[in-house]
Amino acid sequence: MAFWVEQAGWFTAVQDLGRTGYEHMGLPAGGVMDPFACKAANCLVGNEVSAAVLEFSGAGPTLWSDAPALIALCGGGFTLWVDGMEMPAWTAVRVRAGQRVECRPHPEGFWGVLAVSGGWDVPEVLGSRSTFLKANLGGYQGRLLQPGDWLFSLREGWIPEERAGAVLPASRRPVYSPEAVIRVVPGPQRAWFGEEGEREFLSATFQVSTQSDRLGYRLTGATVPRRVGELLSEGMPRGAIQVPSDGNPIVMMADHPTTGGYPKIAGVIRADWGRMAQLRPGEDRVRFEAVTLEQAHQIYRELIANLNAIELENFSFWMRG
Image (cartoon, rainbow, N blue to C red; front, side):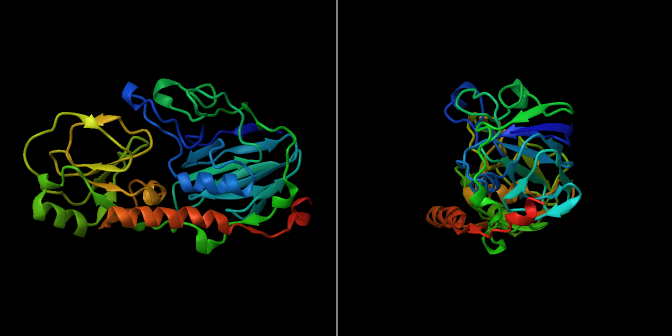
């Protein structure tokens, strides 16, 4: 199974769930911005949840299939079109040899992922196929896709026909909203902000700044008061919310630095990483809601359990043309 890249789109790269165990060397885990979308897309086409996907934002890729395959588009910001016909997202779609696959922009959400049966075939680097652009590491030659590239499946010729038409019901998908409420747990420097700072943080509505990227989402529109001074740098996890001296929070995203010296008022819970990532810089707004660590674990278990709700709706007869 091979696909030829006619148009690469914007910021299209091969990603997976990331590489772990190298933070002490300054290498972030990286991986997809919306982990649940990656897992769902892979489950729909019969892959392991950690298989490599294409991830893109702003403008999606246009591909030509060289052989039959199953594909699934998940996440936000895009619709799937095959030979000029719109196909459902969050659904396993069968494509034939010679068909044109487009991921067209859509106003809801920001990051799309495209899975193929077998998973995209790029070399593993340090246990992952994800792309880390700052180091030209992993993925497709360590870079974004370009027109003329060829993409292959790890399991050439493997098409689980019984999964054509598999769908994750809308009730089991994350809700991507331009006015999101993102859940957080208290951060390790909570005392730096006092009651006033916490109250302002949890009551304010922030806008995602255009100065946002895969490293971090900068928030504007309100400032969070904090103690004067800086910390010694310490380890930085994904989802951590730092507050620099100007009071404008920064949410650490997939390619975040592995250390940082700003106090952390809170951390986005794992279940909401994808919903946070799907906010559109310069447009969407976010508020934060505090939960306990026990609640965060339960919310994540319930989110992952949704993957077991995939339904097999066998309408592959019309997908074959």
